[in-house]
Image (cartoon, rainbow, N blue to C red):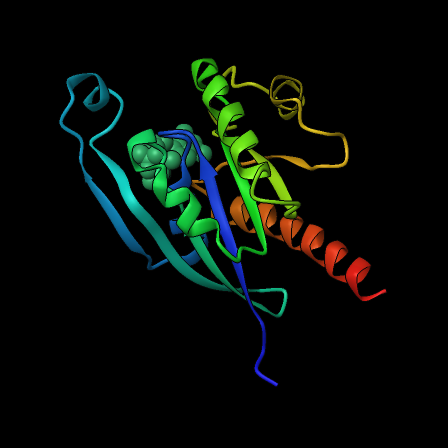
Length: 180
Ligand SMILES: Nc1nc2c(ncn2[C@@H]2O[C@H](COP(=O)(O)OP(=O)(O)OP(=O)(O)O)[C@@H](O)[C@H]2O)c(=O)[nH]1
Ligand SMILES: [Mg+2]
């Protein structure tokens, strides 16, 4: 029997660190970032994901196909496409940007509408001074107690691997409940 490939989606608001996460996790990735043209957006960063990030990685004996979504609402049609058949998702939140929390909350609700998928919330950019703690993010996003909210620094491979391992545990829990 062919070995199962796990489809993992990294979702979150504009600038939350999704592309950085997929890059740190998988190394070489397919990337669709294009230059931003609006001045207010260019103040934040130079490029944005317009379709997806895609990378592969082997963790804990499992082959993962990892898809990063675009964060901007004009590309939100890609969220539906990328989430089809996913085994689990990571909602990445920019813990250094209180203004992005409302958007993260909206995206979280949207992804939960896709069904009862295993997921974790990554409180990203924990290296930035005074960033919101995972506990605060849990409160603001109203994340249920049974869902892990993990501190993440997407710039660091060890940190993103750790977050994915926690997600894999959630996926394994679902698999073993389905098999029992
Ligand atoms: N300090 C710090 N910066 C980070 C971290 N993760 C991402 N960044 C920075 O945050 C900015 C946005 O990162 P991206 O990976 O492009 O974010 P994104 O969520 O893919 O953005 P969109 O695709 O436009 O929605 C970049 O300048 C990253 O270097 C982190 O853990 N710490
Ligand atoms: Mg991106």
